[in-house]
Length: 283
Image (cartoon, rainbow, N blue to C red; front, side):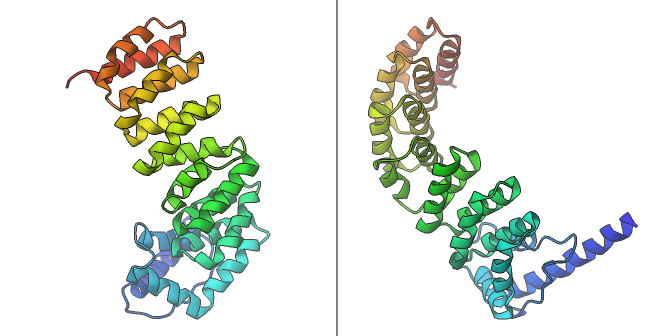
Protein backbone atom coordinates (compact mmCIF):
# COMPACT_ATOMS: atom_id res chain seq x y z
CA UNK A 1 0.00 0.00 0.00
CA UNK A 2 2.86 2.36 0.78
CA UNK A 3 4.35 1.82 -2.67
CA UNK A 4 0.97 2.45 -4.28
CA UNK A 5 0.50 5.71 -2.35
CA UNK A 6 3.98 6.88 -3.33
CA UNK A 7 3.34 6.07 -6.99
CA UNK A 8 0.00 7.87 -6.92
CA UNK A 9 1.55 10.94 -5.32
CA UNK A 10 4.31 10.89 -7.95
CA UNK A 11 1.71 10.83 -10.74
CA UNK A 12 -0.11 13.80 -9.16
CA UNK A 13 3.10 15.79 -8.80
CA UNK A 14 4.00 15.09 -12.42
CA UNK A 15 0.57 16.21 -13.64
CA UNK A 16 0.76 19.39 -11.56
CA UNK A 17 4.26 20.15 -12.83
CA UNK A 18 3.20 19.75 -16.47
CA UNK A 19 0.16 21.97 -15.91
CA UNK A 20 2.23 24.74 -14.33
CA UNK A 21 4.94 24.52 -17.00
CA UNK A 22 2.26 24.85 -19.71
CA UNK A 23 0.89 27.99 -18.03
CA UNK A 24 4.35 29.53 -17.57
CA UNK A 25 5.17 28.87 -21.22
CA UNK A 26 1.96 30.52 -22.39
CA UNK A 27 0.44 27.30 -23.73
CA UNK A 28 -2.38 27.35 -21.18
CA UNK A 29 -4.24 30.24 -19.52
CA UNK A 30 -5.93 28.56 -16.54
CA UNK A 31 -5.08 26.22 -13.69
CA UNK A 32 -7.17 23.55 -12.03
CA UNK A 33 -5.50 22.63 -8.75
CA UNK A 34 -6.72 20.72 -5.72
CA UNK A 35 -4.82 22.27 -2.81
CA UNK A 36 -5.74 19.31 -0.61
CA UNK A 37 -4.05 16.61 -2.72
CA UNK A 38 -2.05 14.33 -0.40
CA UNK A 39 1.64 14.11 -1.14
CA UNK A 40 1.62 17.18 -3.39
CA UNK A 41 3.30 20.45 -2.37
CA UNK A 42 1.97 23.09 -4.76
CA UNK A 43 4.45 25.71 -3.54
CA UNK A 44 7.39 23.43 -4.24
CA UNK A 45 6.12 22.79 -7.77
CA UNK A 46 5.75 26.53 -8.43
CA UNK A 47 9.20 27.26 -7.03
CA UNK A 48 10.76 24.87 -9.54
CA UNK A 49 9.62 27.33 -12.21
CA UNK A 50 9.79 30.72 -10.48
CA UNK A 51 13.03 30.41 -8.50
CA UNK A 52 15.45 33.22 -9.45
CA UNK A 53 12.89 34.80 -11.79
CA UNK A 54 11.91 38.43 -11.11
CA UNK A 55 8.29 39.30 -10.45
CA UNK A 56 8.01 41.11 -13.78
CA UNK A 57 9.11 38.09 -15.85
CA UNK A 58 6.48 36.65 -18.16
CA UNK A 59 6.47 33.10 -16.68
CA UNK A 60 5.72 34.46 -13.20
CA UNK A 61 3.13 36.90 -14.51
CA UNK A 62 1.35 34.14 -16.43
CA UNK A 63 1.23 31.93 -13.35
CA UNK A 64 -0.06 34.75 -11.14
CA UNK A 65 -2.76 35.63 -13.68
CA UNK A 66 -3.85 31.99 -14.01
CA UNK A 67 -4.01 31.51 -10.21
CA UNK A 68 -6.04 34.68 -9.76
CA UNK A 69 -8.34 34.01 -12.70
CA UNK A 70 -9.22 30.54 -11.41
CA UNK A 71 -9.79 31.74 -7.84
CA UNK A 72 -6.97 29.52 -6.59
CA UNK A 73 -4.99 32.52 -5.34
CA UNK A 74 -7.93 33.55 -3.13
CA UNK A 75 -8.17 30.04 -1.70
CA UNK A 76 -4.44 30.04 -0.97
CA UNK A 77 -4.72 33.33 0.94
CA UNK A 78 -7.70 32.01 2.90
CA UNK A 79 -5.67 28.95 3.90
CA UNK A 80 -3.13 31.21 5.57
CA UNK A 81 -5.62 31.28 8.46
CA UNK A 82 -6.29 27.53 8.44
CA UNK A 83 -6.16 25.57 11.70
CA UNK A 84 -3.61 23.13 10.31
CA UNK A 85 0.00 24.37 10.62
CA UNK A 86 0.90 22.36 7.53
CA UNK A 87 -1.77 24.12 5.47
CA UNK A 88 -0.61 27.54 6.69
CA UNK A 89 3.02 26.74 5.90
CA UNK A 90 2.24 25.36 2.45
CA UNK A 91 0.00 28.31 1.62
CA UNK A 92 2.76 30.72 2.64
CA UNK A 93 5.10 28.86 0.33
CA UNK A 94 2.69 29.31 -2.59
CA UNK A 95 2.28 33.01 -1.79
CA UNK A 96 6.05 33.45 -1.78
CA UNK A 97 6.57 31.46 -4.98
CA UNK A 98 3.99 33.61 -6.78
CA UNK A 99 5.20 36.79 -5.02
CA UNK A 100 1.65 37.86 -4.14
CA UNK A 101 2.33 41.30 -2.68
CA UNK A 102 -1.31 41.80 -1.63
CA UNK A 103 -0.99 38.86 0.79
CA UNK A 104 1.86 40.42 2.80
CA UNK A 105 -0.33 41.41 5.82
CA UNK A 106 -1.66 37.85 6.16
CA UNK A 107 1.78 36.29 5.77
CA UNK A 108 3.23 38.78 8.26
CA UNK A 109 0.69 37.60 10.83
CA UNK A 110 2.19 34.11 10.57
CA UNK A 111 5.48 35.43 11.96
CA UNK A 112 3.81 35.27 15.38
CA UNK A 113 3.27 31.51 15.06
CA UNK A 114 4.89 29.18 17.58
CA UNK A 115 5.17 26.50 14.90
CA UNK A 116 8.71 26.62 13.46
CA UNK A 117 7.67 25.37 10.01
CA UNK A 118 5.00 28.07 9.73
CA UNK A 119 7.39 30.79 10.89
CA UNK A 120 10.10 29.71 8.44
CA UNK A 121 7.64 29.47 5.54
CA UNK A 122 6.25 32.93 6.30
CA UNK A 123 9.72 34.48 6.56
CA UNK A 124 10.81 32.86 3.28
CA UNK A 125 7.66 34.11 1.57
CA UNK A 126 8.29 37.68 2.70
CA UNK A 127 11.90 37.42 1.57
CA UNK A 128 10.76 36.41 -1.91
CA UNK A 129 8.02 39.02 -2.14
CA UNK A 130 10.47 41.68 -0.89
CA UNK A 131 9.76 45.39 -0.59
CA UNK A 132 9.39 47.80 2.31
CA UNK A 133 6.26 46.14 3.74
CA UNK A 134 7.90 42.72 3.85
CA UNK A 135 11.09 44.12 5.37
CA UNK A 136 9.15 46.07 8.00
CA UNK A 137 7.19 42.95 8.96
CA UNK A 138 10.46 41.05 9.43
CA UNK A 139 11.95 43.84 11.57
CA UNK A 140 8.85 43.83 13.79
CA UNK A 141 9.15 40.05 14.15
CA UNK A 142 12.77 40.46 15.25
CA UNK A 143 11.62 43.03 17.82
CA UNK A 144 9.19 40.48 19.26
CA UNK A 145 11.20 37.27 18.95
CA UNK A 146 14.81 38.41 19.13
CA UNK A 147 17.65 37.80 16.71
CA UNK A 148 16.92 34.81 14.46
CA UNK A 149 19.01 33.51 11.55
CA UNK A 150 16.00 32.91 9.35
CA UNK A 151 14.45 36.31 10.00
CA UNK A 152 17.75 38.11 9.42
CA UNK A 153 18.52 36.21 6.21
CA UNK A 154 15.09 37.01 4.79
CA UNK A 155 15.38 40.64 5.91
CA UNK A 156 18.62 40.89 3.94
CA UNK A 157 16.82 39.52 0.88
CA UNK A 158 13.59 41.50 1.26
CA UNK A 159 14.89 44.96 2.13
CA UNK A 160 14.74 47.55 -0.66
CA UNK A 161 17.66 49.90 -1.34
CA UNK A 162 18.72 51.96 1.68
CA UNK A 163 16.10 50.39 3.97
CA UNK A 164 18.71 48.72 6.19
CA UNK A 165 21.10 51.66 6.03
CA UNK A 166 18.44 54.14 7.21
CA UNK A 167 17.17 51.78 9.90
CA UNK A 168 20.71 51.43 11.30
CA UNK A 169 20.77 55.16 12.06
CA UNK A 170 17.41 55.21 13.82
CA UNK A 171 16.58 54.32 17.46
CA UNK A 172 15.92 50.58 17.69
CA UNK A 173 15.17 47.97 20.32
CA UNK A 174 18.16 45.91 21.56
CA UNK A 175 17.79 42.93 19.18
CA UNK A 176 17.05 44.94 16.06
CA UNK A 177 20.23 46.90 15.35
CA UNK A 178 22.49 43.80 15.54
CA UNK A 179 20.09 42.06 13.14
CA UNK A 180 20.21 45.05 10.80
CA UNK A 181 24.02 45.03 10.93
CA UNK A 182 24.13 41.35 9.98
CA UNK A 183 21.65 41.98 7.17
CA UNK A 184 23.81 44.85 5.92
CA UNK A 185 26.84 42.57 5.89
CA UNK A 186 24.96 39.85 4.02
CA UNK A 187 23.79 42.35 1.40
CA UNK A 188 27.37 43.58 0.85
CA UNK A 189 26.35 47.08 -0.20
CA UNK A 190 28.92 49.86 0.13
CA UNK A 191 26.11 52.23 1.17
CA UNK A 192 26.04 50.45 4.54
CA UNK A 193 29.69 51.18 5.35
CA UNK A 194 29.14 54.60 6.97
CA UNK A 195 26.28 53.45 9.26
CA UNK A 196 28.28 50.37 10.26
CA UNK A 197 31.34 52.48 11.07
CA UNK A 198 29.10 54.66 13.24
CA UNK A 199 27.85 51.53 14.98
CA UNK A 200 31.41 50.30 15.52
CA UNK A 201 32.36 53.61 17.11
CA UNK A 202 29.30 54.24 19.26
CA UNK A 203 27.27 51.03 19.52
CA UNK A 204 26.88 48.54 22.34
CA UNK A 205 29.37 45.72 22.76
CA UNK A 206 27.23 43.32 20.76
CA UNK A 207 26.62 45.89 18.02
CA UNK A 208 30.34 46.67 17.73
CA UNK A 209 31.22 42.98 17.45
CA UNK A 210 28.73 42.46 14.63
CA UNK A 211 29.63 45.75 12.91
CA UNK A 212 33.26 44.59 12.63
CA UNK A 213 32.27 41.33 10.99
CA UNK A 214 29.77 43.03 8.67
CA UNK A 215 32.41 45.49 7.45
CA UNK A 216 34.67 42.54 6.75
CA UNK A 217 31.95 40.78 4.74
CA UNK A 218 31.28 43.92 2.70
CA UNK A 219 34.99 44.29 1.94
CA UNK A 220 35.26 47.91 3.00
CA UNK A 221 38.89 49.03 2.81
CA UNK A 222 37.95 52.49 4.11
CA UNK A 223 36.95 50.90 7.42
CA UNK A 224 40.39 49.36 8.06
CA UNK A 225 41.73 52.21 10.29
CA UNK A 226 38.60 52.12 12.48
CA UNK A 227 38.73 48.32 12.75
CA UNK A 228 42.45 48.42 13.62
CA UNK A 229 41.55 50.70 16.54
CA UNK A 230 39.19 48.00 17.81
CA UNK A 231 42.12 45.57 18.14
CA UNK A 232 43.05 47.23 21.45
CA UNK A 233 39.53 47.31 22.86
CA UNK A 234 39.11 46.10 26.44
CA UNK A 235 36.46 43.59 25.36
CA UNK A 236 37.97 40.37 23.98
CA UNK A 237 35.00 39.69 21.70
CA UNK A 238 35.53 43.02 19.94
CA UNK A 239 39.26 42.33 19.56
CA UNK A 240 38.49 38.89 18.12
CA UNK A 241 35.87 40.26 15.73
CA UNK A 242 38.22 43.01 14.55
CA UNK A 243 40.98 40.47 13.87
CA UNK A 244 38.61 38.33 11.80
CA UNK A 245 37.42 41.38 9.86
CA UNK A 246 40.97 42.49 9.05
CA UNK A 247 41.77 39.01 7.78
CA UNK A 248 38.70 39.09 5.55
CA UNK A 249 39.73 42.53 4.29
CA UNK A 250 43.30 41.36 3.55
CA UNK A 251 44.54 44.43 5.43
CA UNK A 252 48.28 44.14 4.93
CA UNK A 253 49.02 47.24 7.00
CA UNK A 254 47.46 45.51 10.03
CA UNK A 255 50.10 42.76 10.21
CA UNK A 256 52.05 44.23 13.12
CA UNK A 257 48.87 44.85 15.13
CA UNK A 258 47.70 41.30 14.50
CA UNK A 259 51.09 39.86 15.49
CA UNK A 260 50.77 41.67 18.80
CA UNK A 261 47.41 39.96 19.35
CA UNK A 262 49.12 36.57 19.08
CA UNK A 263 50.19 37.08 22.68
CA UNK A 264 46.75 38.27 23.81
CA UNK A 265 45.58 36.94 27.15
CA UNK A 266 42.49 35.39 25.51
CA UNK A 267 42.99 32.16 23.57
CA UNK A 268 40.20 32.88 21.08
CA UNK A 269 41.68 36.27 20.26
CA UNK A 270 45.09 34.67 19.70
CA UNK A 271 43.53 32.10 17.39
CA UNK A 272 41.65 34.78 15.41
CA UNK A 273 44.84 36.81 15.01
CA UNK A 274 46.79 33.77 13.80
CA UNK A 275 44.08 32.90 11.29
CA UNK A 276 43.94 36.49 10.05
CA UNK A 277 47.71 36.56 9.54
CA UNK A 278 47.48 33.33 7.60
CA UNK A 279 44.97 34.98 5.25
CA UNK A 280 47.38 37.86 4.74
CA UNK A 281 50.16 35.62 3.44
CA UNK A 282 50.89 35.96 -0.29
CA UNK A 283 49.42 33.09 -2.31
